Image (cartoon, rainbow, N blue to C red; front, side, top):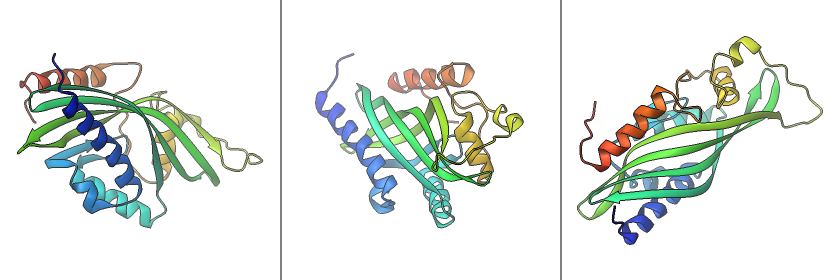
Length: 202
């Protein structure tokens, strides 16, 4: 597939802006990255980007502390549509079972992009989990996790899910993940269909 490098560079710039604006809580700028009705799916939330802004703002007021570190991106463009996959790290801090902890989750963003009126925008973003860990901030403290709760979730994001569940969020038990399965297969299929203009929105 022939790639327009200008389009690729523009999309990579938007990917970087998403993380910077989201972590800085700069929502007016964040909104400019999306196509109308664009959606976001992560372990702890699914909905429009406005829903994502709302749940994040509410969470921050109640102590939500999440940051992101970006890695490399792969972008495929076909006319006015594109798919990208970006490696990134989720860093979330919260009190877990009485102990202040950091969760580190290695993941990927899988994005569907659309160009309209000469401007690229994000249509759908989905998180793929690869692996995670949890650590007490104070190394002198000991964390004893509830094994039954921990094992409810796939190994790739079970510590992140544990923390988020303890924080009061409902976590998806079948997020796309490194070990594969129907959720990941369906996600990759949606990307192929999007690039080939065969994508049907539900």
